Length: 382
Image: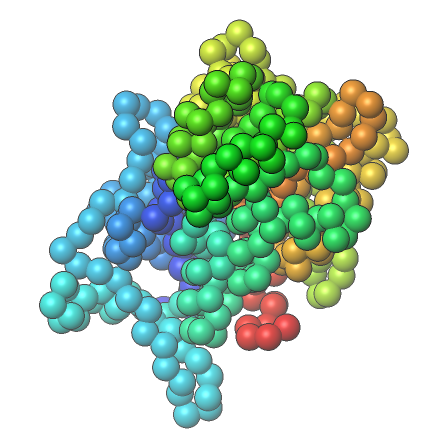
């Protein structure tokens, strides 16, 4: 091993996962693995199947894309990858990756890990569960910690945190599986207090998976059933008339203030067949479904206020590393926060890296920045 190789940080790139955003995570991993600075980092890719098995991918993850007839996925193997953590004589924690067969016999030592880039979207990856595993292993990782990940994944508790921080949220109601199953009449009366159109969403999902726009009350039951296919807990939001504005947040180096990108705007093209909101296809598979502009054409004072509120939202969740804050700028001139994504879409064409590109930090540099932030952050309580 040369001195240059010895100085590289070994990065475990985790992708796939058990959520409905599995394919998005795969394409995110492709973008990152193609762009990561290999002069500074030595990436090792590990995929997580839809059933939760950790595997050394049989397909080069750099080839994943949304092109073609089938969404990319991590396939099951006759072997699995495990993290093995131990303390050496100096009490330093060392974590290695080991590939074993299904009977537990070792196949290969895949080497040590310095830092983890968890490119997982949705439950069982972005919601604090994986972050807890990495905390127990004393492994540095990019992005939000356990609590921020959990709150940031749950649209109900996220809104509570925003309101506590003084941010304006739109009218909404939360319905749990128990409430819908045992007292549907009361739940419906609460929902009827909202004004059409409504957006019915899984409470703990992303990438617009499972979301339905309800324009008539007769559509509500089917919309709730669709959301509950992805999460038994749902959030129903009253539609707002206005522009969809996003802002990227990047943690500050050395304990400094979080940084914000220029604002970006999403405009969904109504004639393309998409249901008048930024759905999965508009985000990832239909290049003509939406236009993304950055910087957004906004008055300077509105831009600065959205950037300020993006930091407020980041800190309300106790977030770290990165986030993307989504707002509505209404026809009445109000700024209403919709949600924060603690692991936003990170494909090269996703809004988060595009906003930072416009702000002056390129895709490869942004990956480096996230890993450097992770490496400088202490493990454990902080």
